[in-house]
Image (tube, rainbow, N blue to C red; front, side, top):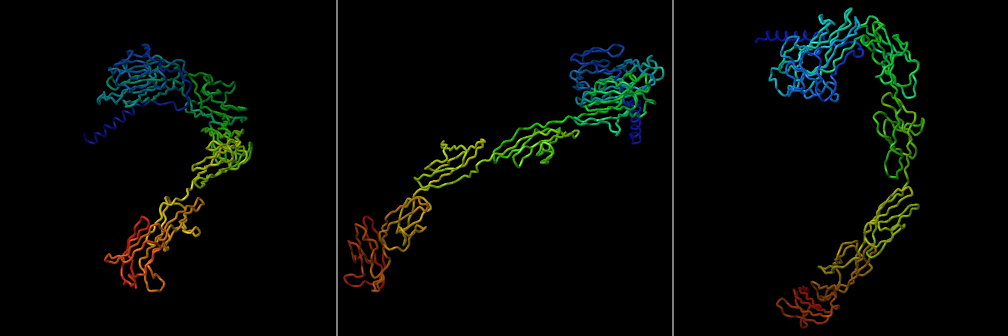
Length: 627
């Protein structure tokens, strides 16, 4: 198919669609109360059937086929229908469910008609209904040959011979989810016509997809759009609790879209639902001397004053609401009495309908915080929450008082203390008017402890505030000498554990290092002292000093070979050899001294070897004789 032909077809289809929907439309002004309503009732059982005067279709209890209908609270009467409720969603609310007839004639397509009597001549009306194509396209039953719903709304005269108005909905195709859509037809009764017949006709033939539901059919009068405003041109007013509006002037402003002339009857209501006519108020203006409560005002409007109270002929203006905004009292979350060091706010219960400001006085005073439901005071005192409604901006003059107090408590700090092993220490705090409780169970101001550990003290004030501290006790043991040795030319002291120790070999002069160098041989008393006063230990050590050389040259410096400290041993023996193993000298008594001679003759410079036995220990080595 060429592009020109396609374009022509699209244009023709669009034109037909616009023509099909011509005539339908809603009342552009204000409507009156419904003259006729049909919502098909409520219940869990299908039906009841409509009379033959209402429909030409056949009633069935369920699963209507072509040319049949049912009335049910569930639209899913066939597997291809939407699983949905009526338009309003009311519990068990029903709707009329129609399966289009396979006969395309208008008589077979007429599925609903109803007469309406007692109308006014030359008056506008609106006929409306909610429709749904109940075919669920998600199940794919129609396989691309779906026939759309297309409904014609008609108004006939009372003789059912002359059509007064009509309009088509246009094609309503199935959807994958239920969609209710409202359609309406407006018309004006001609002279001498006070009764009409409402009709709905299915334009399409039966088949897959042409299945519909109808709900909430309404027929009502249609009049001007009449708006109620006050002297400032606004359509509503809010007042705060306790406030009074004096001389409220309201005015009805019609738009002359339907009526040429206007008659009025003002009405008032306390709830916006139940209305009462105000005697004598029939002008387009209403003056209310005083309003201090929620009130609603509107006006019935008709072209002829004789029809002002006739629901079949009048319309109803917009509603002017005077809304009284009641003050809201903030709900306190309680007085706040806390112990020093605890952070907490004064607060009221969060409420989205108000905002809260905080003050330091019941009236006036200083603004402390804005638009917050809690406030953290810096000082003790009473603080006041003031509520202002979000809607209407009404400030409650009665502020909510909340007392806030912080109790003073002793300031305690943890301590770490050291004691010498085997000693004791007194732990204490000195506060009056408090109760003491130690982790040992004692309740005195002080306790004495003699072992390492953590001791906790709790103080409870007269305001029941509890503070605590820890005493961490560490014991310092006395030093223990593990070993004393001669290493090279030094006396070296080792302890069993490290500590804050100092060392001495005379009991007077102490040093931090456990090493003493260049000592003469002899018997020494070694001292190890704990520097915090936790004890001194001593041990004797015989320091043997065997020289490495001697120089018998009569200069009084190292002229003889002698062993420092040998006199302190019970058993002493020494042998001196030359390099060939010849014994040159022996000794069995200390102190021992050798001048470097053999049989009265000086031995030459050379290395000589020795074997020394001190008690049960033997020392060997060599010594150099230097001349």
